[in-house]
Length: 80
Length: 232
Image (cartoon, rainbow over all chains, first blue to last red; front, side, top):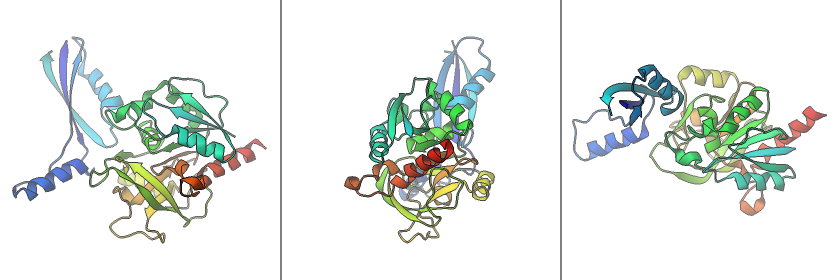
């Protein structure tokens, strides 16, 4: 099996309530150096050997991410 | 007038919808999400709940339920479709309505009755005069409506904003009157044609005085009236 890792994040300009809350909480804890915090999703996916990355991209566009609000980045990890 | 109410695994407001519709003197039937025949219904309701446990994103999996291909076909042919709460989320995931619904600002699940202002819109599901203020409960964690600036402009210009969160007197505060942070205080939108309507509030919960109000009745009454007019 081949393995891909997918990082899903909000598009630029889309307000991220969990990220904004974490940002405020860190600043309240005294971490004055903290700027913007964004919280996204991390997905590991195993697919049959030889599966092209385009196929994984299709899965992201269709189901794993919502292109209206989210961007994603696919990394090829290699064999599972 | 016969309303078809779709049951997804995890729906939990479908009985309220059926009760509301029957209370108003119409027929209703349940449609299992795996069904592919929705003939025999004059309007389709996607009810609230937590379809597929809200996994991946709210509505993201339900959108691919077998019945949805038929619902999309029905909507594209001009058939009236309403999505309430999780149903609204499913309609955006299915691209029958633009935009998306994010986590509420403040991260709290909000369950309370709110004031909503009816806007001038093309929506077939509501024929209350613009400016009317209705009181309807909301009950959600992801009702923070968002869309890109071009889409917002199109929604405004095309009369697709149907309901906005407001203060009890119908005004809107500068910082926004939406308890969930929704863009432009949007609580409900329709498609360009006006037959597909999605909203976060639950009108089905306020049609019977026993449950605390009757403001929700107007939503089901308008589409029923329209169906009779179209038929005659």
